[in-house]
Amino acid sequence: MRGEKKFFLCLAAPIAVIVICSILLSVTGGYAIYTANTNKRKLPVYCVERDDNAISISFDCAWGADYTEKILDTLDFYNVKATFFVVEFWAEKYPEVLKKIVDKGHEVGTHSKTHPKMSRLSVSKIEDELKSSVEAIEKIGGKKVTLFRPPFGDYDDELIETAEKLGLKTIQWSVDSLDWKDLSAEQIAVRVIGKTKSGSIILMHNNGLHTLDSLPLIFTDLQRKGFVFRPISELIYTEDYEITPDGTQRKIKN
Image (cartoon, rainbow, N blue to C red; front, top):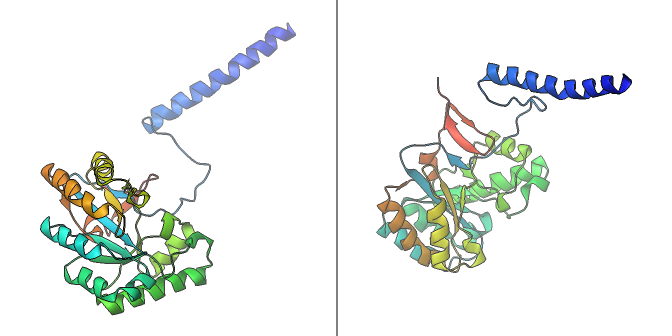
């Protein structure tokens, strides 16, 4: 008798769980409810929910400028406007290149002052990295800086909150070209083309060994498919939006 009672209790417990879950799913329309942590983590923008085939290509500039002017010529040829994320010491070492980026109508954001892992820094150090780099870039380029990409893609809530207070939108990427790994031009192009969809933000580097040669392959294919390149500030939303847990920025539907 005691064994039967234990068996009944063991059987009843999972049945009760199933019944409760079924009731919750019927009430919520099938969506899971997460209540363990009511504080939402701060997230940067990885990509944007869009249905107009608008995308962005970005270049991180920290080490060298050997290919940058030819990249600018290629962007001109394909009528593509890009976003360049620039480290302060790069801007100060290559001021004429930075001026040319701006003069050709491209967008410039900050990539920090010294390229550290910024989640390890104090708030005062974060502020210095951002304020100093923005000031230097604006002084050389003559355009207001509103975008920030964390070095190494490393961030935490404190970093994003500090950037927001300084008027900077934190931007990541959804398509990593891996051009920094010295893949061939064809490998880079296949990777980027295969992963790009409407609202994608593509990450590349101005001094990747085969980045320059991959661009004609990427632009020819994606433009043939109807994709339109825009600077990141023209891709993202500036009001009435939310960021989903996977970093997708989307309009809030009223």
